[in-house]
Length: 283
Image (cartoon, rainbow, N blue to C red; front, side, top):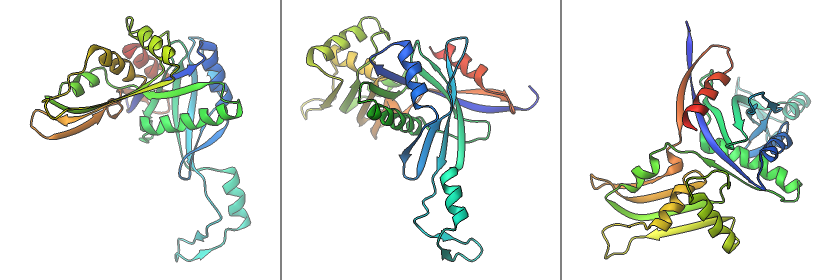
């Protein structure tokens, strides 16, 4: 590879109820070629989904800025303002600006989405921003469909993140935000136990907030809450605050430490091969 370009690949966990491989394909097809506003004047869309022979779904997420011509336009030669012209209005309806495109592959079997966090042009897409864009696209579709789905998107952290957060010598608070996982995930019997707990209480999500008592040096998480935390790290998040070994205040969440892998690709070459390699490596 004479002139390799370094890209970055991130991972999200997409969970839907009801759940099946076919439902994921249907969901992505339903939201493709549609646009959603996810932040300020920023819009997102998913290009037409392609089903690959290996079972993955392939597409790209496109981000761009929508121009609001209700405000005046600024002439950059002298910074005077004026009303938008008819041509400005035409372009604002047919174009998004500051466009960025990021390829992704989705595995319906594991419901993991592997995407270009940094593309060949050096543009970056944070996991949190992608999560917001996907959730807005799914929410818009779900509203049109009559809210027949429960959909959540979570950031997949580095494998040892939860252990490192809970290894702090003084833990003052722990927040476990647990979204309903897929029954097929299976972390030993933990997924099954969590599903039973949620079903028994009629819950879609479970929020557990813990705060250290003044009499205790640290929070000692029991096994029940540890199971919740282990499931929540990929289905929601776990947030911890306290003091580190140096005695300094610390606050962090599993979602703050996303799983990211670097890869090298030839300029102009699709990054699908490297994304598949990462998918196999981290699965």
